[in-house]
Amino acid sequence: MYSPWTTRTSWENPDLPHWWSVSELRADHLDSITGGTIMFRKILSVVTIVAAGWGSPVTAIEPITLQFAHIYNTEDHWGQVAEEFKAAVEERSAGAITIKISPSGTTGDWPQSIEGLRIGTNHIVLQSIGALDRYGSIAGIEAFPYLIRDIDHFNKVYYGSVGKDLFEAIEEQSGFYITGAAYRGARHLSANRSTPTLDELAGLKLRVPPLKMYRQTWENLGASPVPMGFAEVFTSLQHGLIDGQENPLEVVRNASLYEVQDYLMETSHVIGAMTLIFSSNYFNKLPEETRTILTEEGARVMQAASARMIDTEAELKADLISKGMEFVDVDLTEFRSALSDYAAKEFPDLQPWVSSIQSVK
View 1 (cartoon, rainbow, N blue to C red):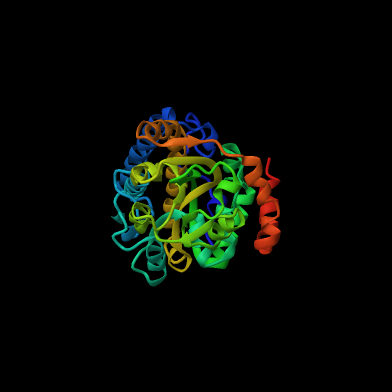
View 2: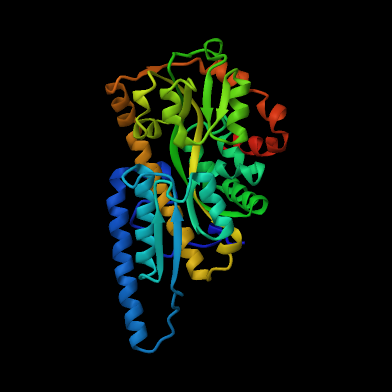
């Protein structure tokens, strides 16, 4: 089992902000990080060439082409993250590793893309950690409601010892290797009526991802969740088949859901994490140098993505308000209280993980 926590980032520059801490990373750092990385790689390329000229042994990276699938448009935040990962890996490997991206769900919605990892038609998928709970319950912890408190807690969990243990447990249970954790924005509820309390939420026909954690969460809050692929959401809202949905602001804006939803309840019920997913069986057969590049560049790019998302959330809110959406404060104490015994009641096998994550300070 390959682990990013057992290796040191070989290109790390002590004069740059420490990229392993997203809480210290913001958009104004990105240029300096990128510049430092590119300069290092240029130096590394020169050293490699000189070493080769003098006949010194140089470890060559075996050429390989990897298929990368995701459901996002290329101009969207996560579409750009995929392009940045491709560029970083290809540059660091001097072109030995080639990544071909299939964006916008061209290989199917995310369940089909992940299944493609198992059969070998895809090698990398960009999606939330919780998407893997179809293959093992532990991954569902990513979507556990009101578990991650804030960005600082997010960073300490996913890039600390708990995150290391969690990623290893997910791999062992699901058969998927994951690297990096990017803040995808807090998930909020949008609907065609204002639902600031549980009484007003009762019976709301709410689209949720086809994952058990989301369905059970909203059932416990009194809504009527409808598992559905995201490609069907807009038309289902447009024709009144469902009353609402829940997603980060970036998804609401990019999918133009403001055209079919009037209200956005700031529930912040999940502070979720995107990741890069590989089949463990495939990944562990790759050469060590290739695994190192994919893991380290994945973690670096995903953390840079977190910083940008943090910096753009206020802009996303302002943009949605300008497009006519009304933002509604909700009784968060009431929402949290309704889920106070959620783990013990619905997911007893996750209780140790809930307690471990909650204990991170």
